[in-house]
Length: 143
Image (cartoon, rainbow, N blue to C red; front, side):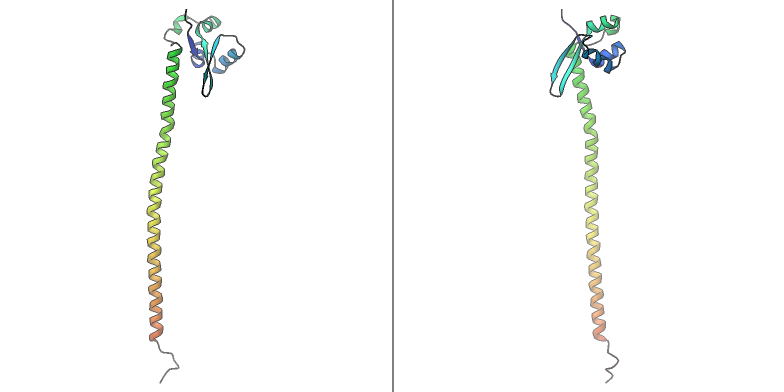
């Protein structure tokens, strides 16, 4: 007889208890469970039969529940969806940042052009002042 295992989340949905309550039950070993090693730590899978007996759950409410493989697939699908949802803001941030950098480059170029024009006008004014000083006669040079 193969045993069906369900995730903690599924167990909490079936029993109507919180996830933390299910975790406390695992810790106190009131229900049978299986510990599965993952790169991030451990996943706990709960024996469906033991859960049904412990909470006197109607079997009809558990029809449609998946076995361990399907629950792992659900976890993989959920993880993939979460990754896609977490990548979307990064993509939007990247495009916004690219637009800001382009805008900054244009504004910097405009500023340099404005500074160059200002310098040219100052040089022109200095030249006009020099010419004016050369052409004007001093009041003491009357002869």
